[in-house]
Image (cartoon, rainbow, N blue to C red; front, side, top):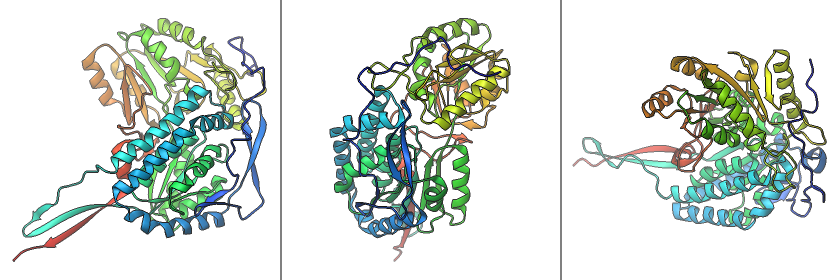
Length: 501
């Protein structure tokens, strides 16, 4: 059985006056090393494609191990002076970075939408989140806490210092290019480290634009950007002996490769990987509120979101009623190119990812799983997939266990609380989850028993810079956001003075 290329659910809205034009907004299409944009070691380039139209926006250089080595040399040279700045000085620089981003927010949102296909609602939210991340870290770095100095052994005064790690390598994903760069760069810089970052080869434009916009605010070598492929640039960052840490947001496969590569030099590893967030809806839940909330939380960024509410477990007594309400909400989602102002669902990021998501839908249909709405790609051009709700999903089905990473939600039923918790935890991931119930005692107990780094109660996908984000199990380890992220990129040193007389 094959999936048709149309659904009757919706059509793709197209602009009448042409797609987004960003030629005047493009950053220098080079690596950023040692405070300046420079050419790469080779003449190989990667096409950057607009996923809404399948047209080529521009090309960026494919970096090499030699390019990474140049960037690391620059970062190592900049490390001592940057680390010696007092917190107030680094804080003021991070505030100026936030100001610069805010002054250029429209350009950044436009670039992000053109490169990724994001609706402007999502791109604007990403830019605002990036700005707030730098503002939060600018304050947090001046208020770090540690064990108080004191005598913990007789006649010996102990001091606990928190120091920068040194040079940190960063690999960011294609789904949130600017925001994930900010989630990494802000605490890394705040803690006094220098950095070499590799953006996704598919979506590098806002990271390069970031370097262009803030380059004059940072000493040369503190921030370095090398574009290219994971097999070359990413691998060299992972194994480089002069890097003290590698931080990745990406797939489980990428996380495993980074962990293996980093083991040789025993460098620290920070991994924020995939998710398959269970949404546990009990019979006493407010079904209308859940359906309205999941309209956004399940389909934000076209479902290309590791915390998306993509796996619904609903009590069998209210399953039909809830599916009706959810389908009614999903039917109102507007699909189209970001140049159309009221669009809520954009394309998937690439042809390869579009084919991957379409493959999951095709196999689900072959297994007898029904699409209550959607269920297929939409007519091109562009990599659009209809917002989908799959029902009649059996326990253990591929579509309910693996990360589809598209506008696809699966619905399963459960019989009792223990069944719900077992099913919620029976996936390789542990990034996020949500519990929907009006019973306060149940909400506390069930949330505590779900094996995920973040569990929402009667909401989903609500984030704040003051609280940590990160997962368990196959979702990786390490924490983004909050003071925990700042601590992640620093180390503690104990100095003990014998003052006995």
